[in-house]
Image (cartoon, rainbow, N blue to C red):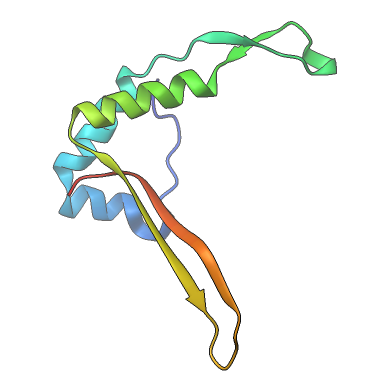
Length: 101
């Protein structure tokens, strides 16, 4: 794959470039290593039978490439309690797909 457009949410790209250039380099290398394969057959009425890129396959390639460089998933599960209320919301989580710790 190759990067054809980049959206920098809240200056994230600039922060990577300035503060974490080695992580930015890893990300660019991993993107270039992932090869999209047209192995999913469309079942949509307008594209029936057309071969599409498989998101599952690409996600697996990303996962393997990041993990081989020492990145891992981070998932923090917690409970939200509302002030002045008996209401509790359980199993709320925030998740980061790939992080270096």
